[in-house]
Length: 204
Image (cartoon, rainbow, N blue to C red):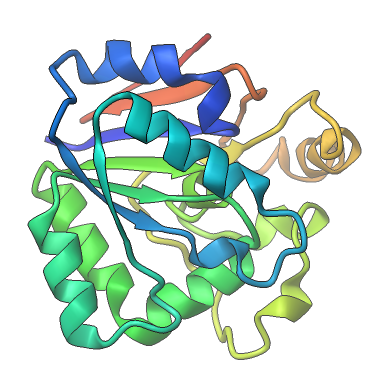
């Protein structure tokens, strides 16, 4: 069963995550992919999320798909209980997921029932196509990205950081531009999208 937890800011929705998982997290293992943060100057959210997972008793294994070998990518994604992709630049993230082949393995694992946790860019990349976030992310940081087709794990388009600075204006611009053509799902930093198969709920 498809099981996904999509957020803008993981540290602000830890309680919602705990409710969603509804099981003892102590000793659970997680593949943590920080790749989206590589071209960014501000990366504190990656370290903050790590701390929150550790507080829950989750054991993290980091995987930078921009640097790892195909063997390492396959082993880590298949071995651990959960997959978590952090925030950062969505275009760079998608470029590296596709280049490394991690995109296919992630889709296989998630479609087989493995829990996927996406924060900001990690949430956006699950959509059918990521071009809609051009107001929020710089496309120039992914010069080798040939297509904007996302992981296509969901049929909606998350808009993270809705009503939160410093993305308030860019999130509003995204909604103004695409609200009539795409199934947008805006979430603030204190909200999350819970996906269980075909059941999609925004909670806070």
